[in-house]
Image 1 (cartoon, rainbow, N blue to C red):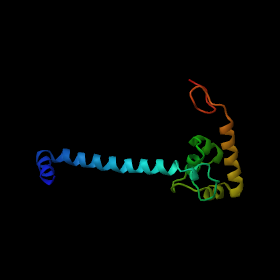
Image 2: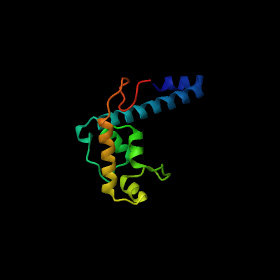
Image 3: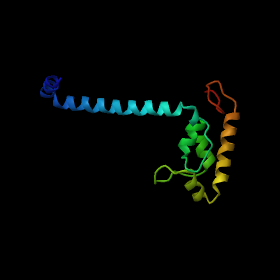
Image 4: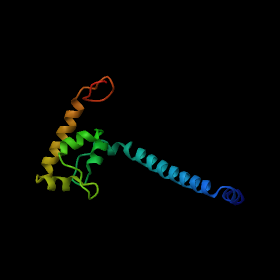
Length: 127
């Protein structure tokens, strides 16, 4: 094994580095994708009650709604200090957390009540 690595290193060191980086990234993203798939296919993470510690992305993933539905419900721009949780978003808007959660739940209910178009998307017409 090591003699093979030495031989390909001697023959093409740049290509060997590129191959090693590509393999490393493939393993990293493969593990990350598998872990995400396992996590989000666990029934305990589907339609979790919305709490203040959750980020908008987490709520969107748990409730299976598109990002724009969450952004419309939150009515707040993206901050530069990392993923904000719902508590911080409610503070930034100057409203109680319960009000923000109610707005999110209403947006989710409206999204789920929208008819599914011919293209399989809710609330959108086929193009």
